[in-house]
Amino acid sequence: MSRTMKIRLKHVIGKLFIAIVIAGAGFASCTYHTNDYDPLDVPDNVSFETDIIPIFEAGCNNAGCHNGTIPPDLRADVAYLSLIGGGYVVPGTQAEDNVLYQSIDGGSMEAYATDLDRAYIKKWIDEGAQNN
View 1: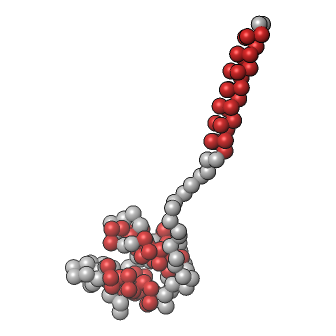
View 2: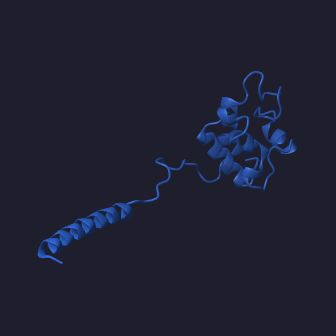
View 3: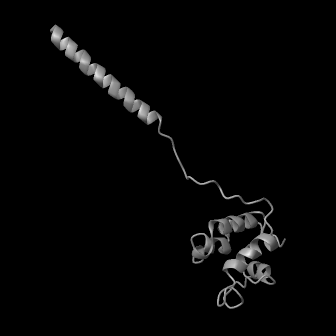
């Protein structure tokens, strides 16, 4: 092999090496990224009376909705019995297994609940769905 060909080969190999190093550095910098928002801040011990009832009053008890007209009745004085007695919530089970949570998380009532509403209701059910 001639001296000129050796110099050209070294030059090509050098460029190839640099390209491989740059590509490797690019792949090494890739990371798995999920969402850009912080998890919702939901306290432990969610209270049915102080945390869940206000959600129902703000978005569910509108005229013609869950104010005794359409089950479940979510008015403050009967909401707990309506949910438990109607099978919408089963205490001691996970939220994902309950009709109430399913309806606000991908179901027919999803548009009427915020992410924070869902987080509170999920936490309340996961904590045992107490009448507290």
